[in-house]
Structure formats: C-alpha cells, structure tokens
Amino acid sequence: MQINTPALAGWRWIYIVEGAMTVAAGIVAWFFIVDFPQKAKFLHDYERERIIERLNKDRGDGEHDQITRAKVWTHLSDWKLWAFGLMVSHLTISPLTLVLLRHSNVLRSRFLCSVTFAMQI
Image (tube, rainbow, N blue to C red; front, side, top):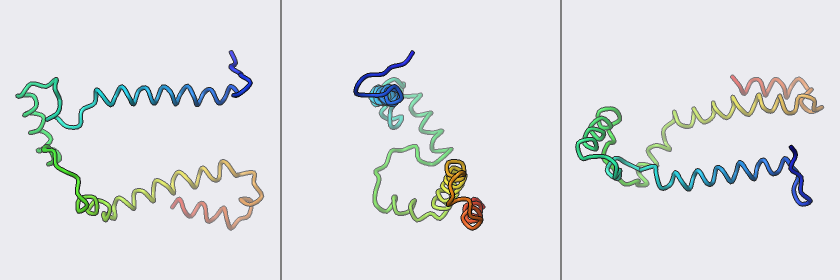
C-alpha cells in the first residue's frame, strides 16, 4: 500500500505519522509520569517513605531540592561529562561520515580517511 497525495510524497507521511504518535505519547506521559515520590498520588505513606529511603541509600537524593546555578555549574564543570560527550560524538560521527561519504572523492584521499579514523581512537 502506498500513500501519495498531490502535496506530500509517501515517505513524508512516515515522518508525519511517527511524529504525531510521539507527540501524543508525550502528552499522555505528561499526566502520568511523576517527578518525585512525594508527588505520587497513587502511593501510600509507608510506600512513599520506603521509596525515599531507598533513593537516599542508593543515590543520596531522595528529597526534592531546587535547581540552582551553582548545582548546574558543578555538573557542567565535571570533566567526565565532557569526556563522555566527546567519546560518544567521535564514535558515532566518524564512522557515519565514512559510511555516508565513502564514495565521495573528498574522502578518497588518504589524509582525510586517516584523520577520521584517528578521531575514533
């Protein structure tokens, strides 16, 4: 079955349908997913206390606190966060570049291929 309209080709309808389903799921999730155990209406008091106790034991952040600039700066100044981000970007962008542009005259030069492979390391 092919969907073709005068305004949109069939492949564009795939993105429209998938995007509409994602937006609908996001709207539904907004009303059902709770931020923290303190806001969960479906929990009893003893369940809520147990969950907060387990969160404090596991991560130490069972109590809801406000986001401040100091906390954001603390996390953004962590070198491990930036190192992980660079690793992920280099490990995904470099091979993708080679796959998508492997028949290009630009990437046939040995210099650019070696630079792209070196970025993966």
